[in-house]
Every structure is written in C-alpha cells, then in structure tokens.
Image (cartoon, rainbow, N blue to C red):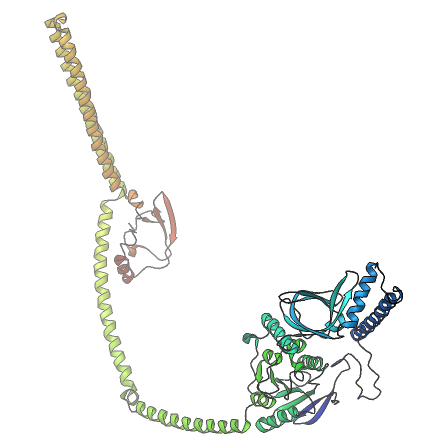
Length: 592
C-alpha cells in the first residue's frame, strides 16, 4: 500500500496540502510510486550481510570438498592410512560431523561468557548442568536480533555443529537465537522499557498537560487506514471547529519507525509555520505484536519524549500497551478514545455556557435586590436622615476635650514652673565660684589647725623630755641610766605613735572634707551626665528658658572640659517640659 507523501490540512478554509521535503521521511530517495523513481540502492549494512552469507557458504562448500578429497586421496583401496597427520584427523572429524549430524540443530541452553566483538560477531557459550558448547553468531545473523543477549539468559538457538580447525574444537554456529519461554520481540520490548525507565522517559513529572480547548490537532497515522477515519469522525462529532492536520506515515514494516519519528520531529520544528499545533494524536488500529512493533522502537520513544507538543497515543486495542504509550503524555486505549480525550463535546460546552449565563443573570438580579434593600435600610438610619447631628455632636465633644486639655496644660505649666524655680535656687546655692572659695577657706583652716596641733605636740613633748633630763641629772645618771633609758625609749616610741595616729586622723578628716568638696563641685557632677549651659555673649549661667532669645549662641560645658556651642532655633513648651520630667530617670541634663 503506497501512502500519499503530503501533509493534509482539514481546516475551515478548505483542504490544503503541504509538500514534504525530500529528506523528511527517508534518506533513500523517491519512492517507487513517484514518477521517475529509481530503484533504491541497497544500504551498506545490507550489502555486508549478503556478502557475509556468500563468503560463509562458499567457505563451507570449499572446506567440505577439500576434506573429502584429501581423505579419499589418503586412502589406498578404501583403507585409511595407519598414521594420520593432525590436519588429516581434524578434517576427518570435520567431514564426519558434517555428514552424520543434521544440517539444522536446535538447542535450549543458558548463555554464558557472551561477548560482542567490534566486528559485529557474537561469541558465547551454551551450557546446561553437565556440559558446555561453544558458539558463534556471525554479524549477518546478529544484526537481526531484536533483543540484547546477556549472560544467564535462557535461549533457544538454531544452527549447525562444525569443527574449528585452528583450535581443534567443535562449535555451534548460530543462525537464529530466541529467548526461551518468551518471544524475542517481547523480550526486546521489556529490555528497552527497563532502559528508558532508568533514563526517566516514563516519569510522570515530565509529562506535559493537554490543552483544554485545542485549536489545531495534528494526526500522525496511516492515511488510508480505519484509524484516521475513526479519529476524524470523532473530532468532527465532538468538536467540529477544531483544525485537523493529517501527517500520513507507515505504521508497520521496517521503515515505519523512522517515518513516525521524522514526522514527530517535523511537526515539532515547524509548529508555528504550520499555523500553530496545540496537540498531536499518534494512532494505529489493532494488530499483532509484529504489526505494532514500530511503536516499540527506541527512535519513536525518543522522538515522543523530545517533542514539545503534547502527544496522545491511541495504538491498537485496550490490551495493547507499547513503549510509545508509556512515553506519551496521555495514553488512550484506542484511536477513537484518543480523539475523545483530545477535545471536549462542543454541544455540552454550549449548554454549560448557557446554563452559566442563566445562573449569572439570576445571581446578579438577586444581588441587585439585596443591595437595594440594604441601601434603603441604610438611608433610613438617623445618621443619613440628619447627617449634621453627627457633625455637631463631634464638635461639642471636641470643645469639651479642648477645654480639658487647656486646663491640664495650665496646671502642668504651674507645677513645672515651681519645680524649675526650686532647681534654680539649688543651682544658685551651689554656684561654682562661691563653692570653690568656701572649700578653699575650709581647707586652709584645717591645714592651719593641723600644723598648730603638731607644733603644740612637739613643744609639749620637748618640755617633757627636758623635765626628764633634769630629773636624771639631779638623781645621778650612773644609777638610773638603765631604767631611764628604757623609759625614754618608751616615751619616744609612744610619742611617735601618737604623732602618726594624729596625722592619720587629720588626713582622714582632710579626705572627708575633700570628698565633700568634690561632691559639691558642679564640674564633678558633669561626669555623671549633667551639663552647664552659659550665654555665649555674657558667659552667665542660663537658669530659665525665658532668658534665652531665638538665634542666641549658647555654650554647654560637659565632663572632661568639653564645650559645645549651639544656636537656639526654638524654645520648648511646657508640655515637653512635663515629658522631660516624666523621663528624668532615663536622662540627666540640668541647665544651670
């Protein structure tokens, strides 16, 4: 069956056809259905396979003839030679195997030590519980395998037994290899599914959501099969306004997988040029696993995965699940089911819109009636009937609050003024010049008293010593020398102790007086956070805010002989003074 090589557009504007480029579906040139088509040239791999068959058959025929001729020439009157060469006995065994063993032998065994050579040949060993049979599968036969041969796999191998002369061992030359108990196609499908699942091609997180209302749907299927008819009929019946693009491809056979993959890639790359494609339906009718095998090929799976357009698959019947179904964004049981999933029912949408409009109109009327009733209720309230009553009530309340605030402010100003007067008196009593003068006078008096006390004590002790000296002289120094010397020493020691005690006592009194003076010193108070503010012109201490003029320069003295010059911008009112009094525990600042 030859399919049309065009992209069919079933849009509202009428059927259109998009010509496919020469390199779109195949790289083998034009098909035989096209005018002037040439006979396709065989692929290099096909040529290689045919050449391998010819060479292998020719080699086998030559080897058999050579063995038989050599054995016959080595016999005399039908008798074998008594002494054989290694080559002769090896070729005799080879001829015996070829003559008496069947040309085709089928063996069921387990694969071990399987290796695929870079040339394409497969070398393996077939074994059971008691024996091992070496085997080889040439490239021409290995290329036909649908599954990957691996160690431990149970297989059914068909081929022939022959002797490999260079190593003197017999081998099983395999022409056909299938998995035991499981079809080759089913095993190949299972192996590919495991591989793609590990790569994440089946992950639900990577599947694209379907559009709710697709405008253009591309259909990739056979152009003459029953699937395209079912899909188009279903789309027209459910959602006739949708635009449909048909991409006819082969859906079975050796070239089907490549055509399907190229069709998907073409639609993905040219979606905008084709008028915008929102969804793709990939479908085919039912059939055997061989008929559906194109949808189990890796190239189709990867084309579906890489396509940016959401894809729905409807392949075969409900019991048929292909690799393409697992990779697709949504899998439908049949092509008809795929079309049903792709679009909603237009008539149902229209009915739903009509019902929504009816319900919206009803709700709007209900809301309008409720709002009008609420508005009438509000308009009947006194605040809307006599709105100025609310304003007048608020004005009266404002007047009362203003009077109360004025009264409180006056009382606060009176209390604050009394406190300020008290502070001014205190500061005047501890004026720095007077306090320092009094302190110096007291200190001079105490020093003078201390010096006079020391002089009096020395004089009294000197008189006492003179008295004792006279007594000693009159009594005779020789007789009372020892007693008087001890007494004199004791007196001298007591005199020194008394002098030290008196000096310590006077020093203590002096320290107390000094500390008191330091406490009274205004500059000592500066270290505890207080400050002294003076007029920048006269240098007099500022004791009241009323004595400060706006724009006047003030000098504030801080601890450590630090001075700050500032300019008066404004004077604070009594309310801020009261706030300063309430926060006096947080800051200590006295302007004196």
